[in-house]
Image 1 (cartoon, rainbow, N blue to C red):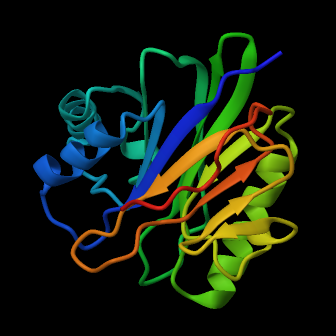
Image 2: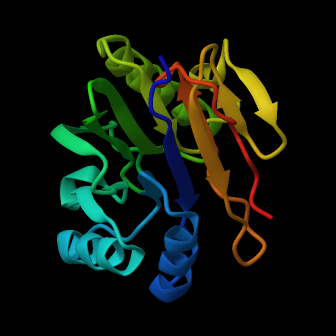
Length: 207
């Protein structure tokens, strides 16, 4: 029996100021089931900002408030969201507070967890934060879709690099993932871990 495929898009908007129209147009064009945006402003009006971006993108805000520290998850009507939670990493003096957002979702009878994270730019701090998130994800029973800058961390270990551009795919994947380069900056990679087994194309770069 063919099981459903989930289309995921992800991007990191750090350093990009207020270009909601451009970002939402790209997301709307991709028509994803799940969009993960990391690096958004989070100190002021985070929830209304997430709702506005979702509306412009033709999606709904599943998770995104001050507690998620700039990590936002948007979903289509096809996706049911059952639970959301967040992880805040220990503060690194002089650095922006980092963390992760997680949402337990389902498409039909298939349940999975979406996670988005921003890690520190400092290698030692990235390693510690990746270790924390690894422990959190080890307690999740469902398949996981993880979006974020995961290079050179244990979160990227034991995955297969499927395409140039940083899409990491575990065995049995049934997800179509897309990335966009905006203003010369590469987007955050998506790591896919055994999501909804199906004969789907995984990791299709944007053209």
